[in-house]
Structure formats: structure tokens, C-alpha cells
Image (tube, rainbow, N blue to C red; front, side, top):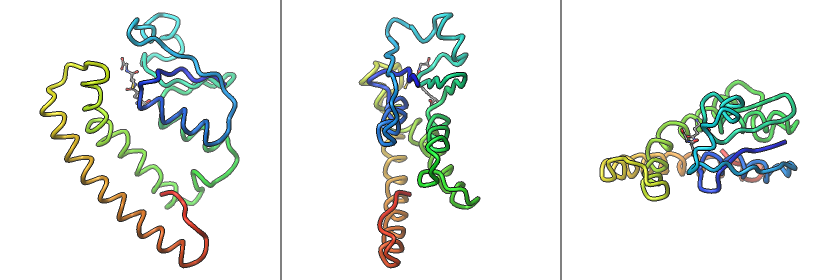
Amino acid sequence: MKLYHHPLSGHAHRARLFLHLLGVEHEAVEVDLAAREHKTPDYLRMNRFGQIPLLVDGEHVIDDSNAILVYLAKKSGSTQWLPESPFEAAAVQRWLSVAAGQIAFGPAAARLVTVFGAKFDADEVIARACRAADSRRRIADARLDRRYRRDASDHRGYRAL
Ligand SMILES: N[C@@H](CCC(=O)N[C@@H](CS)C(=O)NCC(=O)O)C(=O)O
């Protein structure tokens, strides 16, 4: 398995973290974003979106961090990360949407201003990031709190959201 990534990419970090959590052997291929390696014909042949992360597993090419997480969770053969029940699967998808929505366009966008010198209006992006981060953190905390209490009370122990 090969993961095309960049060490400063938050999206790629999610994929790398999950590969490590699962203990999946893989080759990490660094894509030189500054040299626009992700827009070369060779790379675009693998990923028409011209973005990282990109996972190549034999004949399968997966080109989005959330899609990579779903692929790896399914491939792990365990339902620990992505449950089968419609309601629990929807709960996981709900938080993947938060990551691809409010977090990507909030705190992650603010990070791009300093890390990659993105030409965003820094004040506007930072204000949006603070609003998104604060409200999502409070919702996530409340959710974790409820889940922790419920799991602790029936001795199943703590599980992630
Ligand atoms: N939806 C994609 C977004 C990935 C993304 O925005 N990657 C950035 C690096 S963090 C990228 O490749 N940017 C280059 C570009 O869009 O041209 C995912 O979650 O994987």
C-alpha cells in the first residue's frame, strides 16, 4: 500500500495516523506541493483532483482523506471503527462531515495562512475558525461525556465517538 502525502498536510495526517493506529504496513510517498508535483500529468493520472492524500492499494486508488479512512476501516475486518448498524454508521459519517466541512473551512483554513502562506483574509478566516472550533468542541465534549458515562456504567469501557 502506498500513501501519497505531505508532512504539513492535515488531511494527509488523518490518513497516516489511521494507518499507524491500524498497524498497516505502507510506503509513505512525499509529494512536493511547492514544486506542484500534485499537478503533474503523472500524478493527475492517479488523482484527477490533483490533491493529497492519495492511497494506492493494488488496483484500488482512493483520493480523499475521509474515503481513505472508510476504506481502511472496512479493510481492517473489524467493525470497531465503522460499525455496521445504520444509526452508528451514520454517527461516524456525521463527524467525518464536520471534519470535511466546518473544521476544514475553519481551523484548518486558518492554519493554511501561516503554514502554506495561503492568500486568505487572515482576520476573517481566524474569526470563522474560532467560531467553528468553539462550537464543535463543545458539541464533541458533550457527546464524549455522555458516551463515556454510558459505557462506564455498563462496563464496556471508553470508546471513541
Ligand atoms: N477532500 C480532500 C481535501 C484534500 C486537500 O485539500 N488537500 C490539500 C493539501 S492539505 C491539497 O492537496 N491541496 C492542493 C490543491 O487542492 O491543489 C481530502 O479530505 O482528502
